[in-house]
Length: 187
Ligand code: 5GP
Image 1 (tube, rainbow, N blue to C red):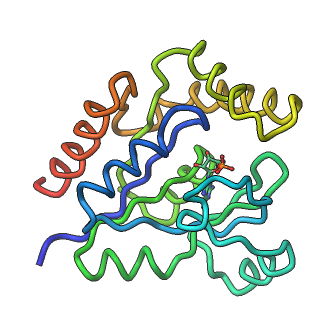
Image 2 (image 1 turned 90 degrees about the vertical axis):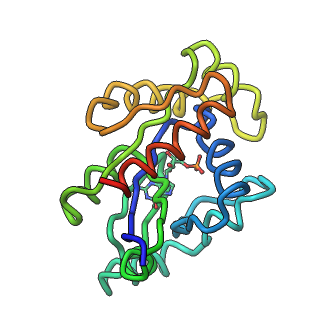
């Protein structure tokens, strides 16, 4: 059986992290994804129901009480959390599972799972990041501005990560991430 691996992948909204991960799962369907539990409203993105389980604040707070999270965080006024069991089960089964979480979530997971490796996805430039976030058009200018500020403060913490992938050319970034996974598994 392969060694199980849980890997954190972070990067600000607009870094292209979602697209990289989608491509990675398309070409390597054996890699699992940790579905986060969130209280934010749906944005109408086509793949958001495969990334998130949407719950009420009440339900989320009950899950906190029952210690069901490996980590949870308040991000732009909404709760986001990583359920503990699927991650522990995947690692025990020898699977690779990706935790797509923000920098605070990553720091909290490192406390609970010392030694867990992490990858930070960088946008090609700040200009490109701002362009992508403004283009989405599904959110108010205030929320967009808040996400840009949040992105800048996340990028300042990139050195907390074991690996950095710059999302310049999409295919290269996907290959880089896949190579990182294989390198860690073969250590
Ligand atoms: P979005 O609302 O744009 O889908 O996600 C906002 C941020 O929340 C992203 O940085 C994403 O990585 C992060 N995020 C998604 N799931 C989780 C989670 O389970 N825990 C934490 N801490 N952050 C998460």
